[in-house]
Length: 322
Length: 294
Image 1 (tube, chains in turn red, blue):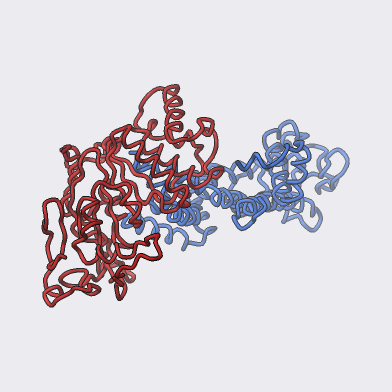
Image 2: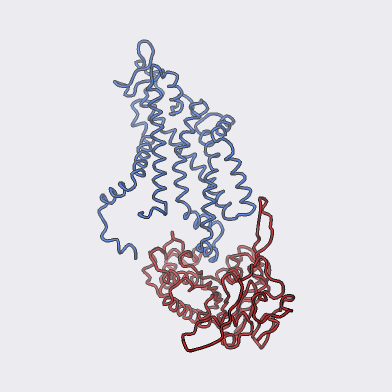
């Protein structure tokens, strides 16, 4: 088993809610509330959960694009949250991100070539000619014509832009890439092309991925392990086959039962969750999920379940795992 | 690709004509600004005489100014100086004060607006309260007070107008930054390890420049009027250096028997301000995203 590249301990991100003329803090949105996991070198950790569960915030907090409120992030033996701003900027060569919206993630005033050269300019890498050469090779790697270097983002489709976004993330030869819903904004036919590209690049450059998505079929396709998030907390973490074959947490079971199966004769029990997602500013006492849980008992409303290893490598936060 | 579908390029003259018909205000304003700039830069060649020379034949036998026509095309003033030459040289004061005071405001306002909008929190609060304070003063009275303290001169008028005129710009820039900084390309720049300075000035600034340029173009006109106002009151540019403001002031005392003395510099000032306002409005039309046919 390969060594752990990234370890996250008890990561929290609270956004203050300010009110009134004095902008006093009247509460916090607990977007990420105590998440801990590790990622092994070369693997893909899928992160799933519904909208607003904090998965994107978690991904950005790991890269310090939003400053975590608490926790510890260890990347390759270094404590990321203790780095000075200068050290952090150098560290960013190792950890990159691909954004969800390819229409917002490229600077409209930069040509594609300039966008891809920017990371090398920022870190003062290579000479001008070498940078140009690298831009062309990056474009080729992501399946785009090198001639596109002189074009601007508005001339491209979403799928092509996302390829540029991926090329930008690779420009610095990172080891870890956070993929924040990289295919959610794309057409289905383009989605699979981009997913295959991501898999090829992972093999070629030995990349480690944190793949954030709400699409279970995508996560099943690309991940080695999967983490399920609910309301800023972790619900379940297991190897992908294990998780899909034997989900332990009732929330995971409900999620999986919602995946469409392309067989009209196949009958199965759908687990329909009732109620809405509670507000992360005022999460329920006890188990976060108890307000909507089909298997809830009295203890769930009083006590948080804690994070337990149910079978080796399979974790869940539930008093009564299935 | 979008440009591939555009068909063969039309000849430049045809495209220019089409664009002029679509944005007449922009080109009219731009034309006036161009005319003013040429006048200001080449004033010594365009003017007929030096601006301070008092001509022996510049007054009538009874000592009143000469009306327009003849040797002095726009007449003379009550000291026998050539009005045409003085109006030409006066454009220098207007342009220099108008443009450079705006540049000062632009630098202060943009920097403060960028910092305020990007960092938010405490710096934002301090800067915005400061902006409120500056905007709360009557613009013109504030400039008067400053010039009174600094002493009347072209340089001090320029500084005074520039130093107090940044309030609106800081607010506009801040608002734009608040909108632009949420775009993921700004996050992406941070993610590749760019410094905050680079994010502010090389990523955010170019993307908010449109509205700022519109504002600046209109501010040049406003600042020209300010300069003329201060010079009119005698606390701006001092005689014998001609400014449209001090020419109007002097001419007003003689308006019953020599109305051209205030009418001509007054018209010049009106034309200049009109030029910058038309240009600013024209730019706004072009940059307006709702204007689909750009």
